[in-house]
Amino acid sequence: MKITVSKDKILDLKDKVLTKIIDFRIEKLSRLGNKALAGIGIGILGVVIVCSAVVFSGVDDTAEEPLPSAMVAGAAEEETIQCYSIHINGNRIVTLANEEDAKAVLDNIVAHYQTEGSEVIDVSYDETVEIIETEEINPDIMTVSDAVSLIITGTKEPKTYVVEEGDCLWDIAIINGMNVDDLIAANPQADPDHLKIGTVLNLFELKPYVHLKLVEQIDTTEKIEYGIKYEDTDTLYKGEAKVKIAGEYGQRQVKKEIVKENGIIISTQELETKVISEPKDQVMVRGTKPLSTLVGTGSFVKPMSHLEISSSFGASRGGRRHTGVDLRNPKGTPIKVVDDGVVTFVGYRGTYGNMVIVSHGNGIETRYAHCDTMSVSIGDVVKKGDQIATVGNTGRATGYHLHFEVRKNGVPQNPMNYL
Ligand SMILES: [Zn+2]
Image (cartoon, rainbow, N blue to C red; front, side):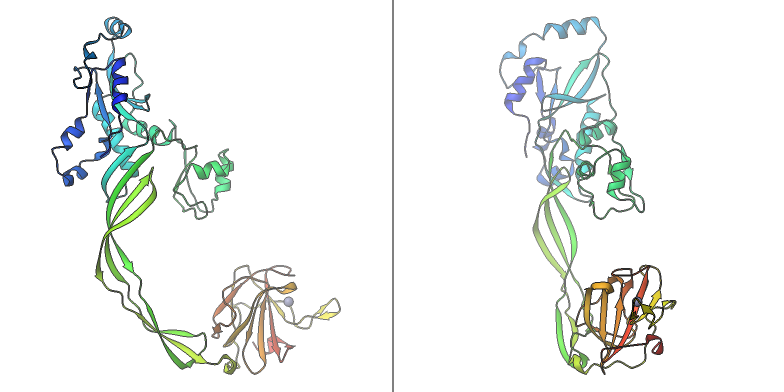
């Protein structure tokens, strides 16, 4: 266990007003076993309570020194209130009404960063954190939650924003008069690329007064990945595979030690692990039949459920003939492959934009152009009706449509004769 207050510090404080220092928790903890120790909230462990009422013993013999005259005079003439302040690196940061509140602030700071269900093993601050009893005229007393918030965020009025559907960091930053980098810095736990609806974002520069290192242990169960075994079959084409027996995840129990600094995990270590159930291999059958023998059924399905021709096959295109048919549909409409085949091209090609080409054997190929997204790779075996892409307007396209082409031995055919 780490005590954050050094002896020098104690002497330094004592010189001002104080006459007794009690490390109440450490005294108490020393009588407890390790197990009990973890359970009572060690948040305060690193903190020394400084108290003005009793004579300090054990540092040196200057304890009988008279109080500074200002304090004596103040106490005599004005009504003062006894209160408890939390000092960080010697500076008073917050003042609480009583000792319980002051302790609660420190416990709640630990709780703020603690992983749910974890056991706290050690707590330490980079800073010197002390609870000091004082008597003050008109002290600025804070509530426990305000004090916690101030120490954690560095600001008295932490403005926040709840992410709504369609929000992006850029917009949130602009609307709130911040720049994006500051907004990201203020939210170290949020993933800027994947904002979740309902996430509460801090709209201020995060300048915590403390840097809390928390060592926790946590028991979790995790799945164990299963292996995959392959069996060859000539009933499927090369590149095709099917599940014969589904794999099953195993399960293991893990005890982990996690070290966090202000909530950010900086290291994780597995202390113990016990297998609860072993995973079971998945068995796959894998095709060996050569793709060159793959032949489509010869009958096509429609590439999209709604067919609306915006430009016909053979239409004049500045002296050239339209090599396919343009089928209008909104962006993102799924495009299906019209017959079984093998994907022979996926990529961007000039005026076609994003295009998928599928070979169906017997010299027949189909082309799907101006796609927005494409979800197949070269060599994939596709089955009639599989989605391979979505409608876009990439390449030379006016508006969202699928340019659908059928070629026989390289010669464009009228696709409508096949649909
Ligand atoms: Zn076209």
